[in-house]
Image 1: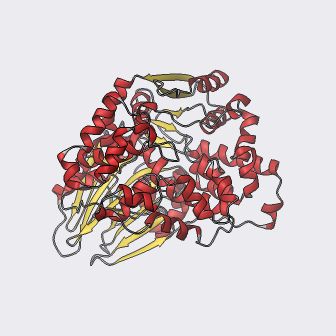
Image 2 (image 1 turned 90 degrees about the vertical axis):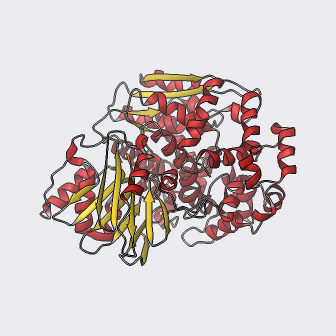
Image 3 (image 1 turned 135 degrees about the vertical axis):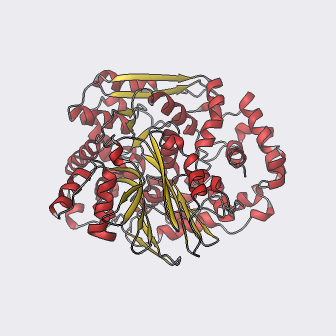
Length: 590
């Protein structure tokens, strides 16, 4: 896990080493174990290293291979790097390091654009070909690793972090109206390639893009998940699907233990993280380091789920760490959590993951997490609503969107009111080929779009703020492909995640499965009052906010008059949503 950045120019000028160094300097926490910049004329790459695989300096980056004429920077982990190394050695390639970075560079020379299809893992990759002058960017299938891009003035810049692009200067920081519509409507999800800023884009998941020396580009989507099913898939029994999921998930968990440093588990006490712990125990791991977090109760809502995580810790004899956070500490941590956000993320549990990661990093460098199970196995409450609707896209929007377009127009200033971009995006995505069933359409949207730009991005940003690598076994692409083939009725069974819950009943205590669905509770950001409310009022009442004029004054007045009455369908605070965007913009000097 690392931070990558770079610049390529197209009008004959040399790349700015100063700009690359500025970008790299913003990502120290993504890679505190080493840094470097390599510049060759019109191309310069920078890297921040967090040592996970091959802890020696032989694996330092940017990695230059003079024999192949390749320079590479890479963020992530290739879980099958040893198998690919053996395949490349059989082709005659020799290696000077033991890490996965060199496997990527040799693999690019051997397989070219077929390379990402052979990689099992999470990755954002940049390659410069000395002999052709081309620059190649590649992002993993499920978008687990971020990759932001800024183009203009005859140059390309890229980085693992949006704020690091800002540090290099020359970025158009005006608000993208389509991005704002998505943020306010699609529960802070701004689908790739857009961001909230007009001058920054992000490489979509499963995408390989090539920039020629003259600036011409070519883009390829190298993977997609299909929800089409064979006759055998339809005929396969529920029990058979459970066993297939068991085997595939066990493999996914095993793959994510590849490391030369200790690996732990973020244990919420829910089904998903509990299953990860159980499978690690099945694989023979003992005294697994597990971590749970809790907050002070507020508004009659509990702030921790320790009673459930304790059950798993006791059952599997883990080395368990419970972290209780007082409200004062949460408030103190908010600026750091916002600073760590590459994009504004409204979910209350950002600060939870930020604080949890700070504690976890004292014990381990890598953790496995349960993110993705709901989006892969149909765990959310809106899937049955979509299944029963004559207009699935409308049912999805009604359940998931924070506001419809009429309310959006009433909430934002006239300059930003416009077309219903978020709704149009959902309808277009639902109409794409490869999924005919309504639930499959929703699952495809959630797993390839919503998941990427909400839960997964949240975990990446908050863990990397403390130099902690998070791995997500539920997003193993082979498991995702398997889950897509499971008929919808099996996934919707038992109130959702039917197949996964049935597997869980075989390997974890039943009281973990037969419990109300929980979320990462942070009551202090849902029921705004006291110092939290003061902070929000200061942000939205500042000169910067007033001059920006994103929101209608009468809407903000209504929010402040009674914050607890303005809650979104997904139980979020409308006031916090507005304030978080403004706080993020001000934090990053916009």
